[in-house]
Length: 301
Image (cartoon, rainbow, N blue to C red; front, top):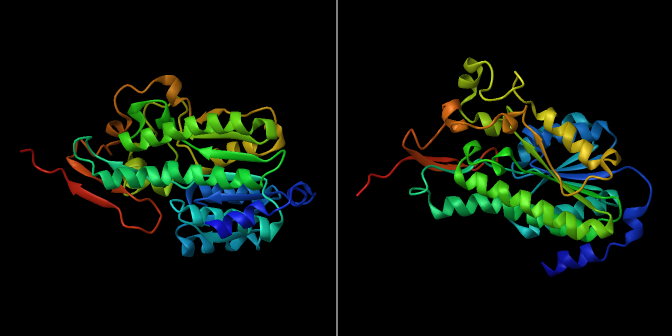
């Protein structure tokens, strides 16, 4: 890390405070919410580094942007990878105005008595460690007016909205957002979180798309339609831009009113995707290109 750290610290403030197009890094930018965010920021005049572990998918997704968004491979579990992508934005475009920590996975699922420690660690490495690395290295090169947007989840507010590991990790993101916002406020760097509800992305559907189609509308959600990736991207763009200049340390729920309506029974049970009730345990690695694992619950002794 010393070589990368030296490069990042060596960037002068003048480079970031100069005029010109705004620059963003979006992790998990190759699909779902990340891709919708990249496309919306490009339309709004940004230059974007779309960072994703699945580089082939990301490169294909960036093709329509005419070079305004560039794909870059990143494994957010690696500090060196994250630092390199931040450095790439500064060296390629001269500055970094916005970081969107969006890379995510479904992570470990199953009963607390059955989840493997390695699957739990993988979940936190992607969802928490990755956000920490992003904020750490972005804050080193950002100047006054820059923004960080972390993608959390309504699972951070209620245990009924996701598996234990995922919910705990997203609650950590919520807490980290508040802490970083307080620390970076004197430098006029704002840090906020967006908390999606049921958004039809590849990560959510993961083998359940037909079930969701048959369901028609999401349960326990006042607004009678499914959430779309661009619903979240629009809020990210707002938090990244000058219209939210007095907003920091906030968690904006974008969930069709789901948290306000209350959870009742487990959301995964209502969706028919609850692994525990089906005797399953494993880890969902999302669209990273790594294989997810589903196992039958081990027999009780």
